[in-house]
Image (cartoon, rainbow, N blue to C red):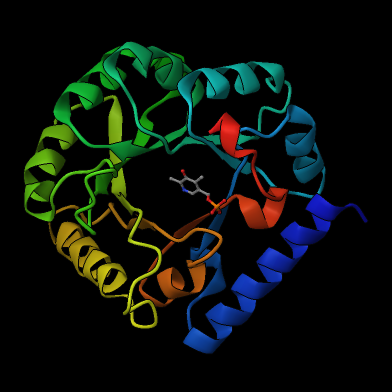
Length: 232
Ligand SMILES: *Cc1c(COP(=O)(O)O)cnc(C)c1O
């Protein structure tokens, strides 16, 4: 068995074991394979091993890969990177999900540019939960306002929240920022019962994310291996 297929198998197994320990229903957790900077051949390898959900960070790269793999119509593409106004069309035409909505302007453009034939674009609001200047996302207290604005756009479907909680700090074990995200998610669902998704957790912290209610785990390195830093 090749490496990517084996890494995928292990990741699913690990997630399943963690779910069992935490008494989480395994079906409610999705593994999104983050293929940014990796060649289409690697995506195909993962596809052949059964993976269908892939995530990209760069609009042009997403659009290119989606085109190259258009025959694999059952691939579900997720966009998880920062999004500028001049790149929204690429994403609106290629993605099924956008995790990184952090302002109304971007949401509006995506809504306008979404081809009707593709159905609603599923979106998550990105929260800058660890208040890092380098990270995108809105402050937690802006969440409900943006949620209300997004839910007024019929071409978009608000599905939940996304965050990149600070990876390593003194509280890495308890993960206060992960817990804060779980609370925000609960709060959002009180207003929007269908916005149940919580996208958080990466290769080095996904067990903490899972423990704190993550429903979408975004794994790159543990599936596809290290990325070339120069490409990022
Ligand atoms: C790159 C990236 C990931 C995957 O990171 P790994 O540490 O390689 O698993 C997940 N989420 C976002 C937003 C990313 O940019």
